Length: 111
Image 1 (cartoon, one colour):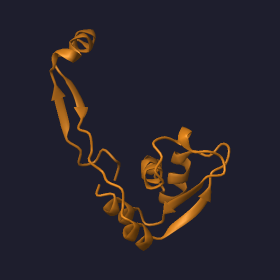
Image 2 (cartoon, one colour; image 1 turned 90 degrees about the vertical axis):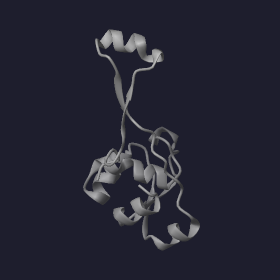
Image 3 (tube, helix red, strand yellow; image 1 turned 180 degrees about the vertical axis):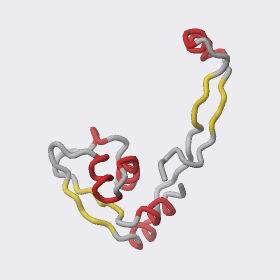
Image 4 (cartoon, one colour; image 1 turned 120 degrees about the horizontal axis):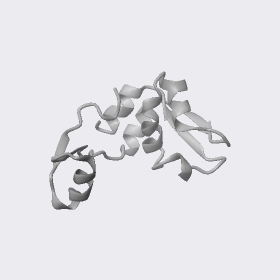
């Protein structure tokens, strides 16, 4: 299940986007609504089995996602679970906790 599954698509015709609409020759811009996710509680984190991974030079979140879940589009679950916005924020030597069961992790994130 990709992160855009079950997401609301909005149509934005505000004046702020007028130059963009004109350049694209469209009447409105369609985009995804901002999701409301929350951080799992300590109890939820403790209940979900994870693997430890030490971040090293050359690591990529999408590669870890592919390795653990067989799908590179779940990179954001690993980032969110560990409190990182992007992989550029992760320092070499940082310990990442990767949820083993993706369904349980998504449930804890309320996605």
